[in-house]
Image: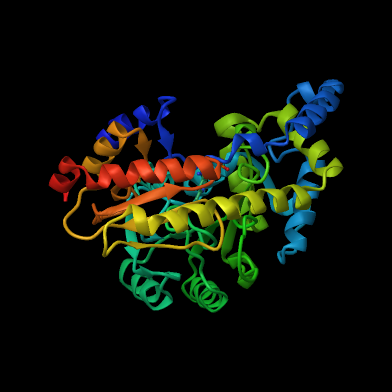
Amino acid sequence: MKSSPVRDLLALTQRPEVISFAGGLPAPELFDVDGWRDAFAKSADDRRNLQYGTTEGNPVLRGVIAERMTRRGVPTTEDDLLVTTGSQQALTLVTTTLVEPGDVVAVEEPTYLAALQCFQLAGARVVPVASDEHGMVPSALAEVLVADRPTLVYLVPTFANPSGRTLPAARRQEIAALAERHDVWVVEDDPYGELRYRGEWVPPLTSYGERVLYLGSLSKIGAPGLRLGWLRAPRSLMSAAVIAKQAADLHTSTIDQAAAAVYLTNTDLDTHVAGLCAAYRERRDTMIAALPDTVPAGTAWTDPDGGMFVWVRLPGAVDTTDLLRQALAHNVAFVPGAPFFATNPDPATLRLSFTTNPPEDIIEGMRRLAAALTSPSAAGAR
Ligand code: PMP
């Protein structure tokens, strides 16, 4: 796990003068500070919330999450859920439970960097499945299922990181059916599903079949610092996941779970999420509107219906890691796309996050990016 040049460069994006489109960070000014202050104050009054808790998690919190998932088309009870320390831990627990060194994990391409790291750390061989503007291609998955016999298939079906794209309902049905036919587990990682700015709701992949595990998160609709997520899994798998979690950290913070239970019970989260969506929709529109004047002719980009990310491919033989150096000299940042590929990176790609900065900063950041892209050393990078 050596440090990468990209990681070293991204450290520089923290400088206050940099407008960063790099991190996948929610807008801090939209955190419901009053609601969380109240929820934490109420929770801290009860000494049981400062005590050790059960590995499965706070039953009230699991109840409200189950109810929310049921309303979103996935019938769920408290017993189907394990509260985790961020959905990242849910992914680690599923991997620990199911993946042996040498096993194959199939992923869409490109995919979430920290998922790739999780699978690689477990000693898995990661096999990319051909994906297009609508996400993973089911016929390509069918081929990989036969040729490589994966243990696990990993997808971010809705407003993916890093591509922003969404898997249509028909593909969800096909992929869930393939999983059943081939007796393979599929992981639906869904931290962005509620952040829709346009278009029709698509049912979660897990609603199409028994072989789809679901990872949920409060990070993008609540606050990521809470580190609260969950795993929805069938009983057959849940007991092993609970043992893996017990070995990892006994349980997720009792006080944080209690505060989230109070918060979700007392707050109209739908209204809060609608407010987030209104603000993020404007930020997405601002970035998309600025792109034609920012990037060279021949550049392609995604125009996501939700989530946090725009995925960009520059024309020609560009290396966006070199370009990031140039961008940082202009006090703007993005993430180079190469680390999001399991095997053959496309060095001309990059990811822009539009949620962290208000529209006026997005406009200024895109201006700086345009300057970085037209500077002489950027031309050299191409
Ligand atoms: N999965 C994806 C696709 C993500 O983008 C992220 C966060 N960037 C996570 C999981 C981790 O989220 P959490 O904060 O719930 O651990």
